[in-house]
Image 1 (tube, rainbow, N blue to C red):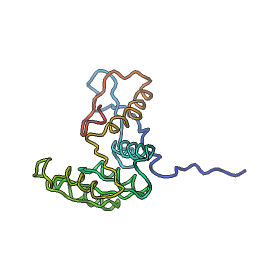
Image 2 (image 1 turned 180 degrees about the vertical axis):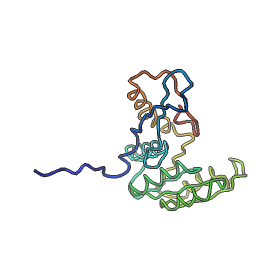
Image 3 (image 1 turned 135 degrees about the horizontal axis):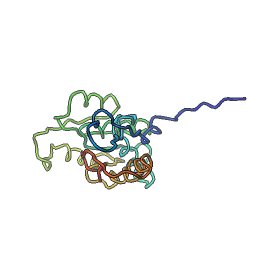
Image 4 (image 1 turned 90 degrees about the vertical axis):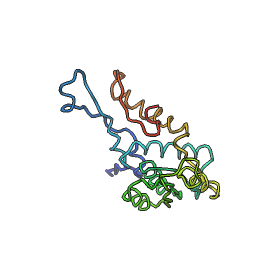
Length: 191
């Protein structure tokens, strides 16, 4: 009898289905049960893995993103890391415009993940040509076959969580969730 190997095809299959873990010590003097959705269990250690994979796969389904294309985004680190991870596995080039206030370690990690990184001054306004927003937009205009993710204004950011994070929490709590507390970056997760 031949045994089947039980393995994932790549780390992208590990995105989502993160555990819900009961908080005991930190909440011991509070009434009720408290749980944490531990997004650090995603392969990129961030909830941003969800949006990176979802937005890229939606762009592929819609024919916007094709083999050999380039993914472009603004980032302070986590989304960029997730996009670089998905890009390298799916075979896309990845260009990231990063604010100079991002740590050197984060910038180095993005480069290690194969992304081409443009470090932009943090002290300029969003409408300045040197801002990471405008640098990303310019690079998108200049790069044939590129897709600008635009996480801050992309409705797919919200959809990714509506279709994955939300249903996971509902299922894991058997629909008994009464309150949700969440941090907000781009706002996609909480929306």
